Amino acid sequence: MKSTRPALLQFSSLAELYSHFDRIFLNGGTSRELTSICGHVINIFDHHFFHLVKLDDVSKPKPLKMADEKAIILSTVIGFGPYTYDKQRALYLESAMACLARPDEVWENPTLDSAKWVYLKYFDTKPYSCTIMLVGEREGKGPVPITSFPGKDRDARKKACGVKIYP
Image (cartoon, rainbow, N blue to C red; front, side):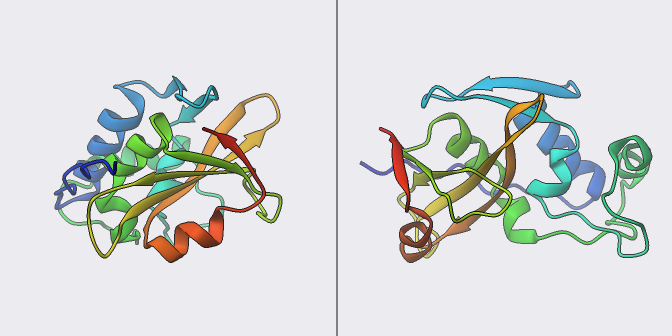
């Protein structure tokens, strides 16, 4: 049975968007350890905000660093300043956390570049019937979120390859 998709986020500024990310993924800290039902212990850090909403400032060298950007992000209470972001990824942050914590399927996919696992969560909505979360493994940090995005059934089928490790 498909899950009910969490409500889409509403926000009008970068500070408000980060506040949602903080509430959903960090519980007010700078990092969090989350045990997914698939058994992975996932380490989430404040800099994953950049990846999960695809935040960028084209005028700055990459990668953006939270030590340099956090004060700017938190002070941007009107609009988004010099930053761009992926609205679809941002709107679906609640679904991304649901996918990370309680995936319906997890695949170890050797075709991925920066990730190792594909987490899939199916929802009772159209056209985006699932959330796809890519999770990687970083030396010294274990499993970490790489990115997530809403998808259609065909997107899930494309990513669901390799070895199914959950359930």
